[in-house]
Length: 530
Image 1 (cartoon, rainbow, N blue to C red):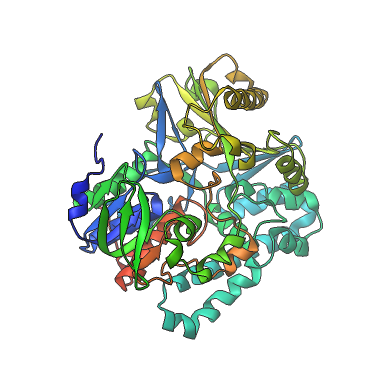
Image 2 (cartoon, helix red, strand yellow):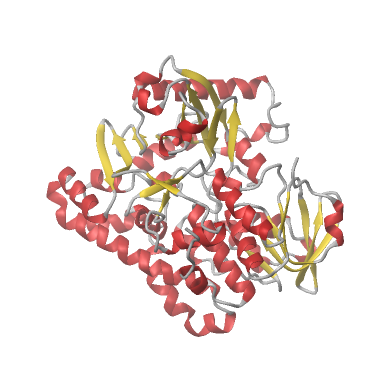
């Protein structure tokens, strides 16, 4: 296996060690390597990429976390420019078309269209008596997302500058992020159906309207307003293209390289202890394994600080899920699959339905999300002609599989397998109900649970979005690249917000903090070779 960890790597000194090869870690590594720093990325599993990974069964392939990305269709946007910069322009994107999400609630169908004007007009067709509320809602989304940019940029400031100007940059976003999505929308309208529709993409950040921060709702909605795209050739091309840039600049990515502990001496991070006992030293240590994992598990008890853990541990982990991966013996064209995603709800009571689901063991999720990765990928037919793939996702509490967490992956016993088979049958039946042409065309159907997520990402409760995006989360000033330990930095989605784009921007911000250099100007001026 290529890039397997070897103890020989412990005999080299580095400018930076990055723990975890998710999007934040790889972005940080690429930016530092491009700045001439010697970097080592340590990944505990046998493949890099975090949620940008794909996996194969027979002739089929699925992504595990990247279902669509916003703002990359605009070659001048910061997100597109950043992807170009860290991949040397090797990433290409497939536009998902005029409609990127379609929601069905209690049989009523709602399309989310590319472009804010088109989306507003579409919502006005659905709710003609709510024009004032709809226009006010989209104006507020744009306003709060602009405030969010300043809020997140403040995280890159040195302490003295943050002390002088930080509150001014943070306060406008915090005014809304401290409120729940339902609280803000209820000030605009009392039409509960309209509120449910506007919140129907809440699975993108994992909390229902009465639980989620309006800040994250605004950020995610704004992210997709101008449409969405999918990486050509599949999501693995994201981490592969970034890895090649890291290696081109003499960086190293080591697999099966589990880190046991961050070495702290005199309140300074100086290296890591590997699971096999090796010690590796560097000028800078970057953790991309989440704030909970970093402060609770990678730092020895004697070095832990309550300032890092007390408030942090009050923030719950985000939602966990099950996912059914389906491979079919017919092309997307033959089976008439869309490029857009489907969100399916039985009723408009999003919060009540979710609460009931969380309290009923092994119940089916009140929201089902269906994605068509092969239909989105323009290169799929070249790789796998005559086939197609689907993913069916739903929320599922970690507590229902907790009893099997100590058992080996794929060897957890008959009881666990029986539960998986039951859930798989329920989700297949839901798929047949929505897309009857699928029945009889399924060649493979495999279910993952929160234990799978924990196994491959090390998130303790199988969460997919790191820390829950509640109002309290955004009040934690410690969720920034620079930590209370000298030379120890954080990166990844806990620093900014949910999603591959946010994790990437977190990597850029972490690099700015480490280099003490604003590399955004270099990113925005970057031009691809073609």
